[in-house]
Length: 251
Image (cartoon, rainbow, N blue to C red; front, side, top):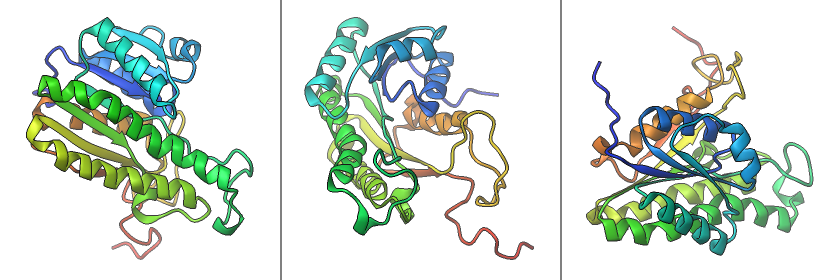
């Protein structure tokens, strides 16, 4: 079978690389021969979780801090020579002050701001740091991790849903601004993603949660050389969860 995802000596900058999806993404990129600048809050955690992956270097970065992002991007360009692909994958959905769901009228403003800063501002910071380099090279693939929460909402997580909705529309706008510069900008919107083997669930039409490597496959497809005619897309990877009532009558 012909490989539908090819990469010509590409270098990818991956944020949130030590997380569940991030690790799967780095493994798949390495398997395709992509060199990886793996970024996360802890360099030690990166090196531990990504041990053994070829053509990879770890960079400590706080995506909420533009100067921290710029320093990591500059370091990656110095080490690898260029950045061709940006995966803005860093994000959080959980509340630090109240476990689980939280009605909007009870949300603390600082918590609202924290989730927007990490999920939305973090994506903006990374794109702003990498885009000038891509524009100068006349080539780029940007793949932002959004969420089905940004498409249909998520009761109890108004802050997270608002941030991910922002990522989706930000990405579409960035796609329009850079379509003539050899740069594509797309989103992948995961649904329920398991840590480890996906467990059965009655909340998706396929009857189970998704796997991290399934999210990674979609992200790598959008980052491939051949995907240059796909831009401004928000690709849901969610087992049909947003199609309609899961427990509706099945024929």
